[in-house]
View 1 (cartoon, helix red, strand yellow):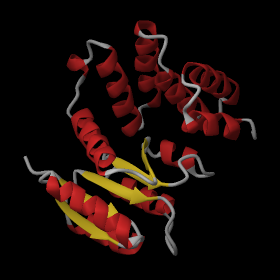
View 2 (view 1 turned 90 degrees about the horizontal axis):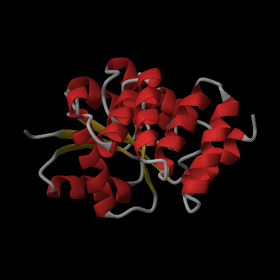
View 3 (view 1 turned 90 degrees about the vertical axis):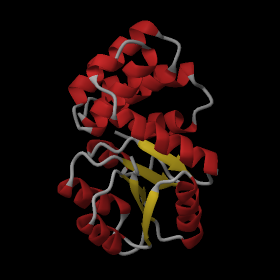
View 4 (view 1 turned 180 degrees about the horizontal axis):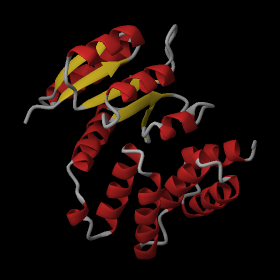
Length: 211
């Protein structure tokens, strides 16, 4: 099966690097240098995945994300950004976008993230039989805006492996968008203890402290 990916980024070098990397992996790739053209392409074609720069002039990546999800709520989206926890990060999670590629990044990082999201889309509940699949299925639930279901699977993942910060960080994300700030802070704190070198978790915790 040939996967078709849409890349929307106003920076030419980034757009070309991502497109070239994906084409080398035999994906079909279309690219747009602004949100308006990206939306038009999205309406005209069927895509399996979108890679979206969150900071763009005129029409922001967050606004583009809202429109894309309005057209197809199930479309997987990878956010490209130098600022993964800027003010609108929670809005991205509310729309099911939890996957980030943080600038600067490598070709290998692009390949790994895209493959992970494609594999995740093909997971069903019958596959959920170990920690890895529990975590990936929980992420799929978040992508599909099934937040309560995601929480249940994340708690199951924690019961298997209590030493990984990722499920706690994701639980913090979900609590934050549900405006349960006390539990969000609790989960972010646990995640940071388990993964003290994670900049994303540290920034999540710093953001939640502002509420």
